Image 1 (cartoon, rainbow, N blue to C red):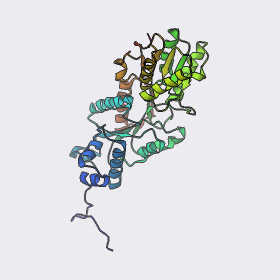
Image 2: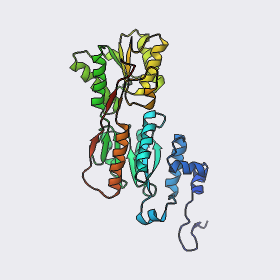
Image 3: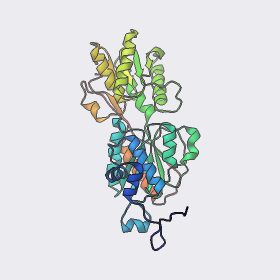
Image 4: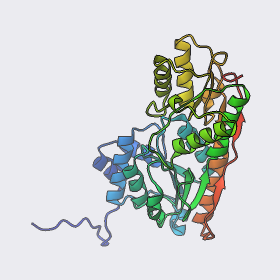
Length: 346
């Protein structure tokens, strides 16, 4: 059988269109456009399928002549674990605003905190799609540091898992956690349950925050109550309520709850209320992240603001510098935190 050669009369390969990508991915051209423009409300499976089709076909965005001349697309990527978690959705909003100040568009990709998907996000040939990548991995570990050596400029967001070879803007998990636990201790609470631990985790968010919680109790001369550390599964509201139910069902004694994120804390508040336990009179509850909902819950939630706005602006500024050719030593920047004391603890 003769080979089919898709060449135009001039001998050039025919340009791949958005319709070609849509056909390959089994979606509409509008969906392809939404994926490429960072529209957040798209199923992970659909987004992954579209990005895979883009890579396979080698689709290049139809950008302006100025950008074609400079070799820039005017687009950066943001890879986060999920958008159903308000922290990452709100971070994405801040990144989009910060990028807009530089005249950049943001393409968002979710990885599900899955190591294989995070590695795929790094390995994907992005040169024809984006000028840089803001990358928030949860599934990777120090052994994956070599995977960060890509031709696309990268700025890491999140934990201090890696030390180089790229810029890293970090949450101050240790000091932020110590501040909120000190607050609970200063309120006279001594039996502080902790929700959201991940047994066996060594370097992730849960491990870092739990270690800081335990260290603070020890500094106050308070025994670390291993029986009050509950996993509860994914960091969602339902998990917080489930963890509280577990503690109450086994008649554990506690007068405070430190949840490793705000969703767990909000679920804990609801779970306590359902058992007739008052917050904060009987049990104080605090979280971490300062998602928007925390200021409007009932009661309003004491929590740690990890510096989401500063993280987004600093990361975008660093990425723009790297995209402009800055090859100075990679930086590690810790964003400032702020403890918001609200009704759930006082």
